Image (cartoon, rainbow, N blue to C red; front, side):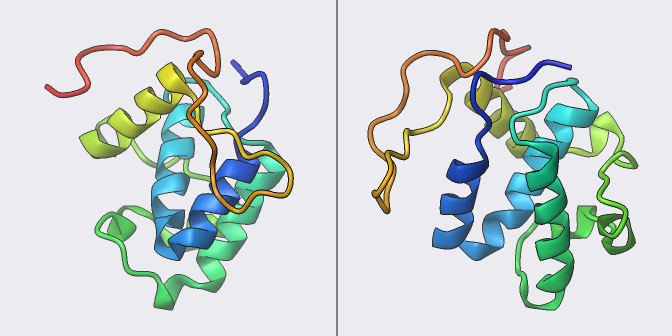
Length: 132
């Protein structure tokens, strides 16, 4: 399992706070990386938190990829059931961009991200053409 120098828990929390329905995108991106690429960008505890929050807000969430998530699997805290080919290219592309460029810094006391971190978040090379 490849782990980043610093998990993206706080950045994910900020994004979801700004756009609550993007919890679906974060769940899909982190599930893809964990179950397909063997890379963990967030802590296991935060992934479990995402699952609980998704389940709790299920009926209120509107997202074009929500249908890919099995609500009953959220109770088990897993996305293992999704086959590699089931992830939309948009999700795979977002995952590769996070790997390649990292996420904006969230300095203590700020409500918005600062400039993007220029170095890769982990030592992993994106695979394939993101825009194919």
